[in-house]
Length: 119
Image (cartoon, helix red, strand yellow):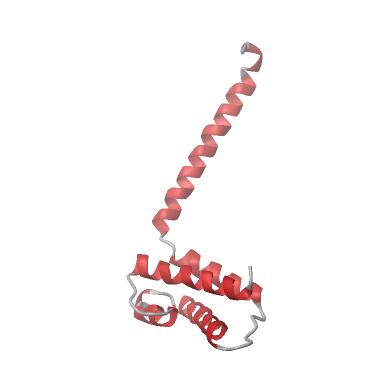
């Protein structure tokens, strides 16, 4: 994936999260962030503005090179995690945990009763 594709996809994802879960209004990531700044932590605002600045430079400045790709990706992951609704994360964890418990229970049952099962 090219740098420009990475930056666009990550910033679009953050814009969608802000619009869908925080009902932000505006045209770009800067405006969306400013629209809901009273509901977001200060350090998250700084991360979002950093990502928006990188996105704008990537799109509007000819020859712009993303120098610290790892830092950009890390910032995006932090923002996505913070903006993703907590309730959905809890439901996902509960689902995968219960599935794991059921599977482990089945494995233990079959291991314990292996000799009694006839094929």
